[in-house]
Structures are given as C-alpha cells and as structure tokens.
Length: 208
Image (tube, rainbow, N blue to C red; front, side, top):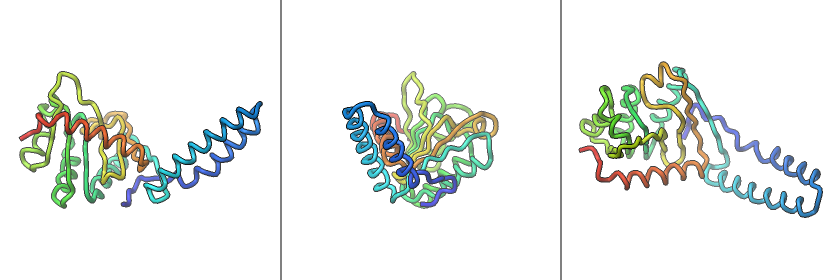
C-alpha cells in the first residue's frame, strides 16, 4: 500500500545503530559491561529484524501536524487507500470530509468498525451515530461516565495512525494537533489488540 506521507527510516537504521553499540563497547570499563552491551545489541537487532520481516524491509514513522490542509489531505489519502479493513477508535467525529472518506471505504468493501465516546456521539454535528444509522457502519460506544479518549485508526492491519488529532473541524482548522503514521509491526499489533479488547467490551453499546 502506498501512503503519501510515509517517510521511510528503518532501512537506514542498522549501520549507525551497530556503530553506536561498537562505540559503547570500546568505552566500557569491564568485560562484564561489554558482554551486557553485546547482549543488548543482539536483542535490539532481533527486534529490528522482526519489524522488517513483517513490513517487507522498510519501517517508517511519519508525523504530521495541524492545522494544515496538506496534513489533512494526507489523512484523507490514507483512508482512501484502505483496501481491506479500517478500525477507527476516536473520541469525536464531526468533520464531514472524514465521514465521507469513511463512507467511501465502506462502499468499496472495506470492513469498517468505529469506536467512539458515547457523550460526544450525541453532540450537535457528530457523525458517529449517523454513520451507523444511515450508512450501516458498525459503531460501538463506551457507555460509561469516563471518556473514551483514544484517537487512532488501524488501516489494513498494516498501519496505525495515532496522536492528539480529533476527527473534528476544530482540530482540522484551528487546534495545534499531531498525528503519526507508522507501519511498525509491534505498534500496529498493540493498537489492534486494544481495539479488539474495546470492541468486545462495548458490545452491548452498539448503535442500531
């Protein structure tokens, strides 16, 4: 999948990192310290190899910032590039352009699921319940006095977008916000596990 704001960083990380560990070994004051550094290096390199195995050799972490129409277009493009699944877990959805991108994904056969905050879903202009009632997209709410304050989306089980950015017009046009996209396998799996946990937990609060 191609994402326009994905800046690859992982493929260039191993050589400088190996040099960093080598420098640390040379500076170590004892054989025990050097052995510890070597064990740490081995563990880190194994983790990096796992990441690159799951992502085809290229791990990226790409932050963007708001307000910025360029950043917003990157977000829309990422949603429009979804091929198989889109799991959205956000506090609030009031931006109609984002709602339309969600609908487009649903209409082209992407499995879309949405988790949102129950109180924000009742706000004037909220799209969460409308997406369920009008477009038949599965939406579940937290149904608790505390906030469901997450702001992330897992795309095709390959990418995750997360940050301070609420899916609202205020965040798009006025607020200082951030959004990071990464294909790090460990990050994607962590957010996916959290989504599945909440999706099961909020089963009784599905919008009908």
